[in-house]
Amino acid sequence: MHQKEQVIAPVLESTFGLKAVLCDSLNTDTFGTFCGQQQRSASPLATARAKCLAALSLTGHDLAIASEGSFGPHPSIFFASADEELVVMIDQKNQLEFVATELSLITNFNAKSVSSIEELMDFAEASGFPEHGLILRKSADTYDEQLKGIVDEAVLKRHFMQLINLYGQVYVETDMRAMYNPTRMSVIAQATEKLVTLLKTECPNCQTPGFAVKEALPGLPCSLCGLPTRSILVHRYSCQKCNFVEDKKYPNQKEQEDPMYCDFCNP
Image (tube, rainbow, N blue to C red):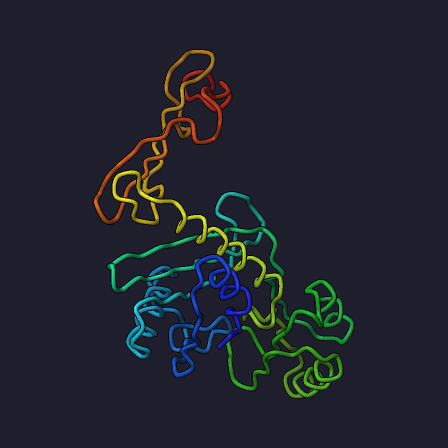
């Protein structure tokens, strides 16, 4: 529905020789919308998985791929917005699931109440308009009289004037649907590349694709006192087919941690 196949399909087709088929009969808006008309009821992973399973049921194919995005504060960088994109592939024939994630600080995610053309156009310029679409509605908590996918300045100003004359203020937000947000589309492409890398990573024991990190174990020793810190010492890989497990030390290419991150040296 949102043209994500433009960045997902070419990568998979060129790498694995797959033929991407759109499931045109599936209305993915029923799983949740960014503009608030339909709240997402499940987690991003569960939602992407549900999209895959619905497509498998409707098409009769045994491979499905879907993506799901989330926007909000960055989990560790305060006052910064972030875009987290999940790309999920389900192999129903072999009972396998592959998940890739990309967390990016590069996003135009924003919204604001405005009361003048000048404020509106300042917001539009900062949001990357008209390459990036905008949404207008009368207030943050109402969803009627909403116009989405605005990419034309004349339409933007005309609809703004209609709303401002009726309500005295207007709520403008970035349209985060992929086809109206090339910045988001690039993050989905990055997540797809990660999925390809995952699919190419085979289990050393049974050669099943998707040999992935399932757990990050802390304990990297402090360079001063030698005690374990909270920093990651081991990435634990596991196979979802044969359950083979392999630990790989020093995933961040360092064997000791700076004392400033040690709870004993720097409590």
